[in-house]
Length: 133
Image 1 (cartoon, helix red, strand yellow):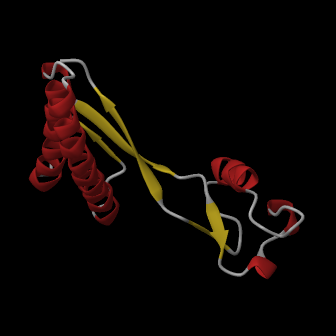
Image 2 (tube, rainbow, N blue to C red):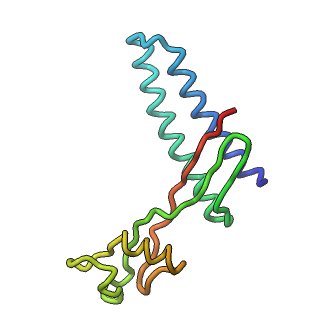
Image 3 (cartoon, one colour):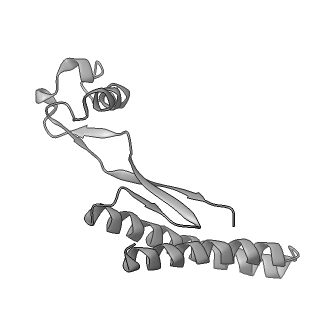
């Protein structure tokens, strides 16, 4: 396994566990809970950056899946697309207003393994599944 990717994933997972533990520990007392919410907002922003770094690292280094004892992560297409030049996209992949029909393009990609002419993918999303210890 790649140590850099494992370190990023461990950091994000530890932050998520830390948040869950902290919420359970608090007795939902007003002041403590308000402080927790402020901390959580900041931590959620950090998590968004960390998981974004994981996604970017995986995309840049050719990973489509990462599997460890604690988590399974896959990169899956967003299922949304945009046209480089809408006039080049065949009508069958467009709605009446000549915009990309994501469902049709996604089905085409699943069947043919490639994007239709003139269509580019908007990227991937990260799908994660925490495993029970």
